[in-house]
Length: 434
Ligand SMILES: Cc1cc2nc3c(=O)[nH]c(=O)nc-3n(C[C@H](O)[C@H](O)[C@H](O)COP(=O)(O)OP(=O)(O)OC[C@H]3O[C@@H](n4cnc5c(N)ncnc54)[C@H](O)[C@@H]3O)c2cc1C
Ligand code: SF4
Ligand code: SF4
Image 1: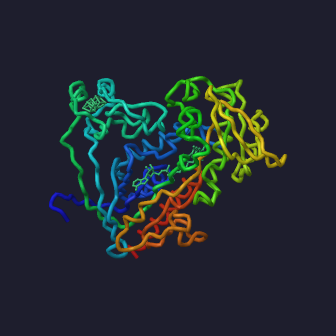
Image 2: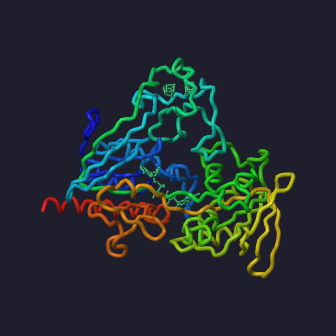
Image 3: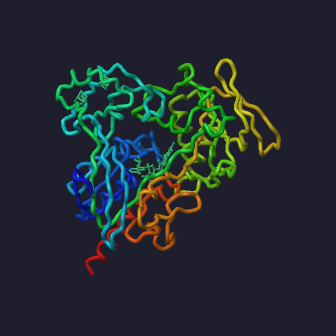
């Protein structure tokens, strides 16, 4: 252990502060266990905090997430590190793990920052905003998003010119360029891995033109446009700022495709696309929405009715595989697709295309385990060692998995899985007392 490294002790380390990790942390904290929640991003909340509304009820995602997030953030038994990484996890013996947690500098003292955004206004540097999925820009000093937790500024040092403008305007003098990385040696009795999922990168399918044709966007970019905390006040085509009136969805982009290395169904894309189509019909009442699909998988409670509701609202469903997208001079897009029901190749013009990108494993955390192997399944999600009888169990006794870290699932299932992981963790911790 290096001389500067501080030691910390908790009952449970939860890695990943999305809805699954948050649920697990909250349940354990309510049972009086001391929990350390480590999140790599600048805010907890995961993908859910960025969503618009949720299928199949169309409840506002932020309205469900924010009370839970603030309960987690204020809980006396939960310590949260954001912008932090977990490394070198070692199992010493049963009920005894050690991990190194690296806290990256934020260059802002979070406790003193009031979130006034004066620094943002003063900063002359603009870059693409990763939390708005590149739809708009942000400053080099920025609050990640309006409902972030903590709602405090951070400095993106790679793009900062060190001009000092933010320091000069900050009313609480909380900008601190002397901050450095801090390492902690953390001792815990058990671990919950809730590192979530990654989204398929559509640049891997060049024939769809993402990144080249500006009016081809991803489903997450459409979520941001539909969310109450959206970057524009309406739905706009990124190419020219026109309101679209004929939008296409391409389902299974990067899912169920062996040639792309992802043969499995992402489970959520059909339903989030059906949801977005309904929301778009409300936001743009004159717009036509067409969903190109292979199969609609509406398997959950209320899902089939939700799908039928979209059909009744006038969303067009075309059973067809999109082969190629080309762009016209006016920015409109021509979809060439195999019409499966008619058995022929067809073309259709749309003014905006949404790629319903699939769910991929968020790889990396298994490498942090040093002396015991956190096994992965054939698709690189965390392997559930006893999937039927004990779904939160992993290959390491005392390490449990929650949410989409073990495979694609929606929000209710992620919360259930977080609940299961906390129950299994409790039972493991209680065994130490027997
Ligand atoms: C476009 C879109 C729309 C959707 N709409 C709906 C919907 O309407 N209804 C619905 O039920 N579901 C919907 N979903 C699915 C929903 O987003 C997921 O079910 C849910 O976010 C899963 O939660 P999670 O906590 O497992 O993972 P995540 O939300 O991915 O959270 C994981 C967290 O772990 C953090 N993390 C990752 N690696 C590390 C690490 N090494 N160390 C520390 N932290 C780490 C991440 O930064 C993240 O904060 C949608 C998904 C998408 C993409
Ligand atoms: S010091 Fe960096 S973050 Fe602050 S205003 Fe200048 S460029 Fe922006
Ligand atoms: S860093 Fe200072 S200026 Fe920026 S939001 Fe925080 S308190 Fe306001």
